Length: 270
Image 1 (cartoon, helix red, strand yellow):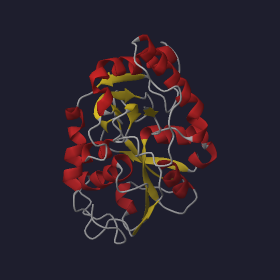
Image 2: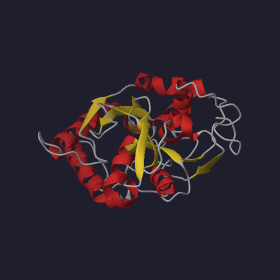
Image 3: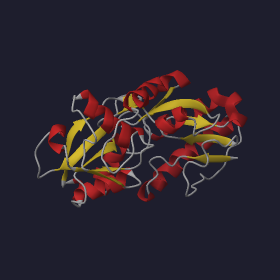
């Protein structure tokens, strides 16, 4: 039996994540549902997603709709309360350097940082914004793409002048501003992308029958940790709304819309 909440679990944020999980576990205990005392933090953050004995986990929207989570069942949609995350949705901040002007169109032929091609917020959101603004990508809108491995690394590449633009998940952007203020001060938000459903909480098939109680425990934990009037803690939900598979159809439609688009000559079509 495992529980894993690694989506925004940066090293500095782990005490917050552990405190949130302690509240969730306590609420589950009241319902008579057994849950691990400690969160699992495997090097491969995707490994818990398809596990049948996953009590509660969190995944990205694109892996969920593409089948990388196996038969996992969606439980709820978190609300984070930071800029760019309205209700149970989130956007990506397109970031460039603060000492450079220009909208997205001005970045044609420049160098982009992308966390990975399997990312809704770091890759697909950027691709759709290029299409939405009718900026014909042709054989590649950017001259080059560097795959960074994480939103934090992508933001760092732009701040350190090793790339020119990146799409950063709204919650990750809030965390970057909090935890790396010096580097964040070198950056600006060029634009915000289209809102998409937030990163889903899921459970494995062994626990699907407990789905209402699992959702209730997540919701109760947000009430316990974020009483009325409290300030937002980046990376920790301020609320959780119910969710069904259909809530993630917007991500399915987005993935279909950009299929075959090439962002740069050095990367394959999406």
